[in-house]
Structures are given as structure tokens and as C-alpha cells.
Length: 117
Image 1 (cartoon, one colour):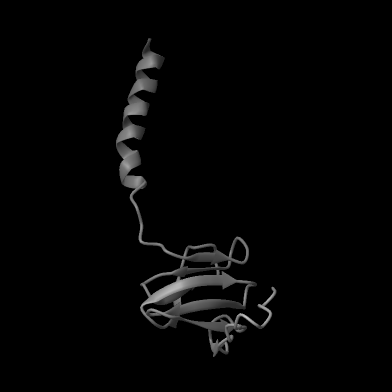
Image 2 (image 1 turned 180 degrees about the vertical axis):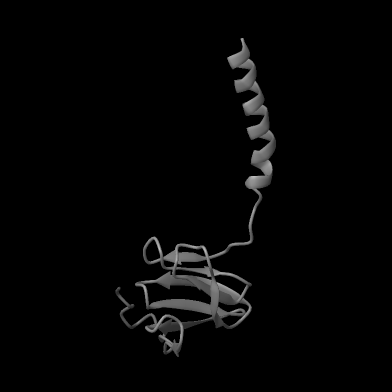
């Protein structure tokens, strides 16, 4: 009987603690190259990086009002698409120290063949 009371008390404590622990966050985009190297949309139009599995984060990119997409392809490289109403894509290969804008890709007309990826 004592064991049942302890288990019941533990369930009540877990049920009370879960809603606070499961509070919604404002995280919009995230991309991980492996268990240690990740990027997140940390302040609306900013990208933050971690090199230690999320224990610490540092800002590596600021641009536009929104981050539309993040793709971290390795520990040192990746791409971010950002902007206001239209997106601009940037890529880095040195862990966010220097960013390069990707050229605009023209949209094919109806008579041209579309892009194939």
C-alpha cells in the first residue's frame, strides 16, 4: 500500500511539472550537421550556431526579418534563406565567419524547360 501511495504521489508531481516543461517556444528553423554542430533561428532574422551539442550558442548571421530555411551541411558549411517578403540565400563554408549571397535563379518561362535538381 505504501508503494502505491509513493507511485501516485510521483505521478501527481510529474503531471504538475509537465506543462511548464512543455511550454511552446518561438523556434522556427533548425538544422544539425551532427550531434554537436547545429544552427537555429534565434531572434527572428538571426542565425545562432552551436559547436557543443547546444550547451552554448553564438550569433553568426543577421539579415532580414525572417529566416525561411536553414541547412547546415557540415560542421563548417551550410546555407540560410532570409529576407522580408522575398527570400535571399546565403552560404558559408567557414562556420559563419564569411557569408556569400547566392545568385538569383531565373524562373523559366512556359516555353523553357524547368530546373531539375
